[in-house]
Length: 137
Image (cartoon, rainbow, N blue to C red):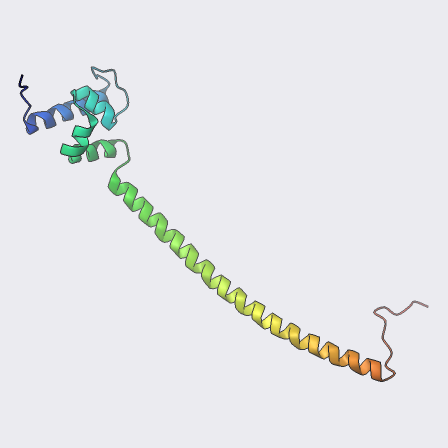
C-alpha cells in the first residue's frame, strides 16, 4: 500500500491557507489561536513536519505570535548587556568601598595605638580625666 505524498510547494500552500483560515476565524478545526500545533492540525500534518521541513513557516507563525526567535534573541541580548553594565557598575562601587574600608581600618589602628600610648601615660603620671559633661552649678 503506497501513499502519494504531496509536493513541497503544495504542502507549503496548504500551510499558508491554514494560517490564513485561523487568522480570519474560519478554521475547519475551530482553532482560534495561531500556533504551530493549530496550523499543523488545520493543514492535516504533524507539528514536527513544520519544524523539520518548513522552518520558514514555523518562523512566520512565531512572528504572528510575537515570539520570533530573532526578536527573542535580540531582547535577551539587550537584557544581558544591561545586566552586564549594572554588574560592572556594582563591581566599581565594591572596589571603591573596599578602598574606603582599608583606609578606615588603617586610621582605626592608628587611633587604637595612640589610645594605648595615652592610657600608658595616664597610668604613669597624675593625669585627671575630664568628664564629658561639666556638672551644673
